[in-house]
Image (cartoon, rainbow, N blue to C red; front, side):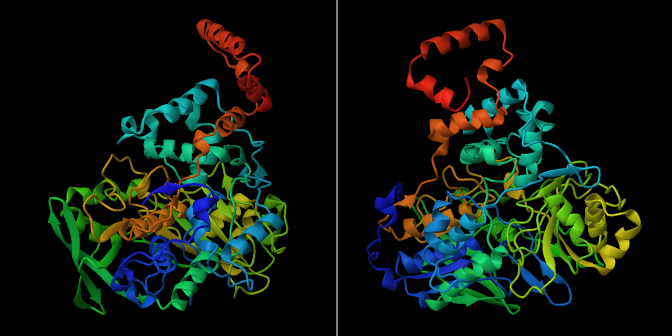
Amino acid sequence: MYYSSGNYEAFARPIKPEGVDNKSAYLIGSGLASLVAAFYLVRDAQMKGENIHILEKDPIPGGACDGFDYKGIGYVMRGGREIDNHYEILWDVFRSVPSIEIEGASVLDEFYWLDKKDPNYSLRRATVNRGEDAKMENKFGLSDKASLQIMKLFFTPDEDLYDKPITDYFDDEVLKSNFWLYWRTMFAFQNWHSALEMKLYIKRFIHHIGGMPDFKAVRFTRRNQYESMILPLIKYLESHNVDFQYNTKVVDVEFDIQPHKKQATSIKILRDGNEEEIKLTENDLLFITNGGCVENSSIGSQNTPAVLNSEIKEGGGWDMWRRISVKDPSFGNPDKFCYDAEKSNWMSATVTVLDDKIVPYIRNICQRDPFSGRVVTGGIVTVKDSKWLLSWTFNRQPQFREQPKGQLVGWIYGLFSDVAGDYVKKPMRDCTGKEICMEWLYHLGVPEDQIEDLAENHANTVPCMMPYITAFFMPRSKGDRPNVVPTGSVNFAFIGQFAETERDTIFTIEYSARTGMESVYTLLNVDRGVPEVWGSTFDIRDLVNATYCMRDGKKITDMKLGFKENIALKELLKKISGTDVEKLLKEYKLI
């Protein structure tokens, strides 16, 4: 496997790998990483679909990319996907997957046309005082000291950041800024999370820094991510006769480990309560989704809370990874990520607004018609003074194809699940769907004497607790995540959010897709370049523009520096006078 960029490799079709007709593949889990791996097995490796077997413990596919109407409970979306135009792997996949919305179009066509016609941006990013504009004015509000802290982290070598939390590098100069409010609510970072992941995120999305305050940086699908992305991919794979086996739990994998060769030899599964074993040869490829951010998720209802259950049980991704990891040091260290659910959980809730009673309060904040079919909030609206640090969003409606006319389906999440609310004096984790809705309505500015009636009779809210949703942000070191294809492996790979690949950042659908592509291309030696991660961190224009944006348009000559630093800056500006460097700094208004 090798990396590439440019149209030469992007548009090429690889030759069929030698011996692929004699091979088969087993994929553990049906999350996006597995589905993308199956896609590349079909399209680029040209493996027969009937030789590809996807083993899924749940009755439906999709993993974390869900969206479902549970009978008697209501619509549920555990999360949402903020999408980047430079998700190179994702768009390589979806240019070949037919849309199920527009005849004759690909999913990429559908997405591209939609974004051009209805580009995403927010008109109100945050509120205070029960629905009032927080008046952040798209400013980051970073002091010179805070800017220098971020710059120091940006240039610190990865190995110096192993096992260190963000608070080793940022103090209140950053942590009380608008920048941190934007950042932590957009990406779900906590102060104690990994400084390494924080740095990788800044580098990965440096080209989008200026679009963070109003969400011009991100794009969203027409409907929930299951119907817009997972379902078309499932239909593509089914059309090629890929074998989906549901209600099939993989408990363990056995390996033959030699000094210079590692081979997966069997898969142990539970199906309908019965233990089974699938024997593997070198020609049987195995793709392992280890760990899982939505493992142990629980769903409540309008009148019941979602239970926090952190116990790791047989048949889940964490238990399987633990069993595998003890067999070889190169298989990673799951307990660096799943050891403390109190540090990796947050809660979401899916709210269905049943009629027009709540709509005026939503419209007042988003300043758009929620029923227009176009962008509504344009991303999350964060309640700046919420004790839960509550955020909420309504994307384009209807979010579900079968959604009744006159209803809206939106999403709420709270970063602090263990803190009592402002209106409902209980921690979010102890609240029913109705109570979470009441807290949300309070912060929308609904009169207090109407809150309970609206939450009970004019909305249906389904809470979801996710104990390990940000487990991948826990401080880690080299080797804690196994390489996509460990050294010496002849027939197996690790895929998903807890496998290691270069430069890309976890908690993105692109990361899952990238591990899927890299695993197939490596194990089958597919002769076509894997698109490298978009190189904005190496583009001086993006770096200069990000500096300008993060400083809220202030020139570098306005920095409050010491006497010696001021002299050094003046000398530097003299040296670049009349050069292209000076022209670039002037173009981006830094001088």
